Structures are given as structure tokens and as C-alpha cells.
Amino acid sequence: MLILTRKIDQGIIIAGNIHVRVLGVERDRVKIGISAPREVTVLRDELVERDQRNNAKKEGANTNSADAASTAKKQEETAAKQEETPATGS
Image 1: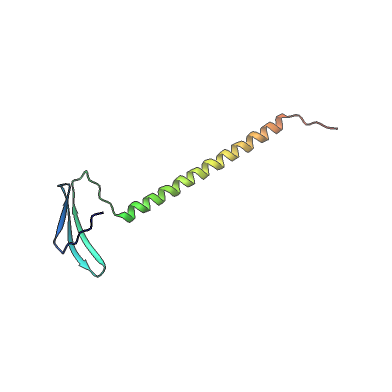
Image 2: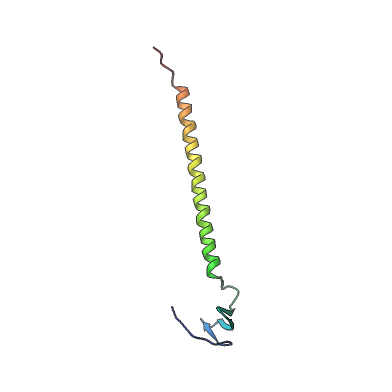
């Protein structure tokens, strides 16, 4: 990780076409501006992390639903086999 110190109205350029500029500092917050080509996606860390957590939860829910469906199907098959097997009496 590259660590830089910048003052208000100073910035950096990344890859020749992405401009990051410090717009202001208030208490513990830094306001930055980012200019990048449309094909470059710029996202906040916390949004990416939230989406990853939500996707993991959805995958877990889908797995649980699939497991429940599989268990129900096995129970139905077992019940059908039991109905097909003739009962033996004494």
C-alpha cells in the first residue's frame, strides 16, 4: 500500500487518467473527489463488503433450501418404497 500525505486541493493521478483530489477535511472526515473514465468502477469499501456478506447469506439460504428439498424428496421416496413392499404377517 502506498501512503501519501496531501493537503486540501492537492491530489494524485493513477494510471494517467484517474484523478483523486482532497476537497476538504472536517474533524475526522476527509472529503475526496475522484475523476475517472466511465469504464472504471469506483466503489466504497463498505458497500463492497456489505454486498459480499449479502451474497454469502443468499448462497447459504439457497444451499439450505436445496438441502431441505433434497431431504423432502428422499422422505417421499422412502415412503413410496415402503408402500410398494408387501407387509408380512404372522
